Image 1 (tube, one colour):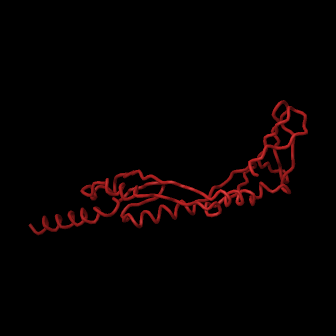
Image 2 (cartoon, helix red, strand yellow; image 1 turned 90 degrees about the horizontal axis):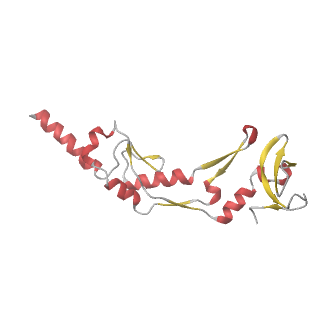
Image 3 (cartoon, rainbow, N blue to C red; image 1 turned 180 degrees about the vertical axis):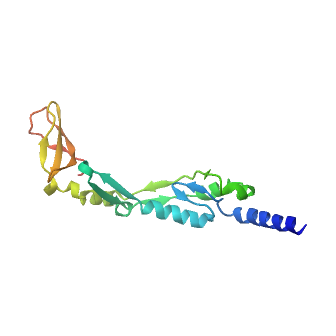
Length: 173
């Protein structure tokens, strides 16, 4: 009888705990949330996405990084994390550690356009000193690919009917 009462106490204690915390094994928006309350989960999701680093893969295995912080990324979750936690069944807590518990939460990412433009301009691959124009295709639209010390870094779209005298169509300014 004591063993049954102890097991019931542990079970219902877990139900009480997981009524306000995510079940073990829960993941949302790329972040492990198991055992966390809503406030802690929201904090971790925001930190994860605000510290995200976009790795640009350039030719010949070279990479360059653009951190979300340089683009002024802001994460808005509203009440979606709270709703996701409330949608879970706390009575399943004993088996949740062995189950993959995927849940959904809405997230809105926004960024500061001026900060993003500045961050892109600061990339080494966007520095004109690192670029050398190489003619690759002819015709109505010409694509020029740039290289730096033998490494290729991308290109710009040229519009000029093949005359070779047009200016690049730029994404900045």
